[in-house]
Amino acid sequence: MAKQIASYTIKVDTKELERIINSTPQRRGEFLDREAEWMVNDIKRHFGISPAPPGGPPGIDKGKLINTIEWDPEGADTRIIHDGTEYGVYLELGSTRHGYTWPFMGPSMERLRRDIVQHAREFEMVR
Image 1 (spheres, rainbow, N blue to C red):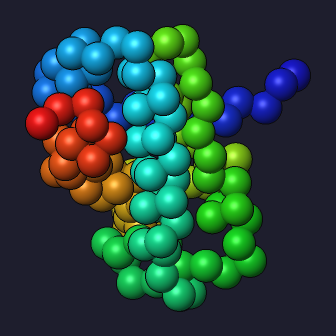
Image 2 (cartoon, rainbow, N blue to C red):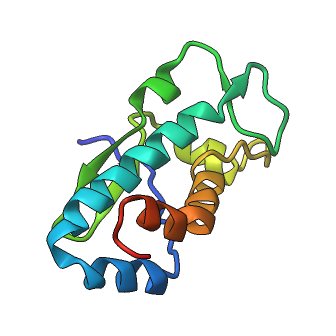
């Protein structure tokens, strides 16, 4: 029997991003790739030291989590940011055993949401 790996989805209001993408459809894939790469790098840049205090980003212990964070395209308009561990979702959302969180994807998504228009200007998609 195949082992089930936990996953979660973060839903974000993407109206502004969709407006930007639709204004220059010929560059949207390149822009989305760039933003996915930005987010992966942002997540990794914000990791702390181990042991990390609850509520902050995870610390680097052996490096498995940080070394498996990557992105993959899923169709023309979707990029999936993921890690290759079974425990990343529990750090992000909390475990039933301890109840603590060490979020790393949500805070990065919030920083991306805050900066997306500036990124689009730098990419010359909007003025």
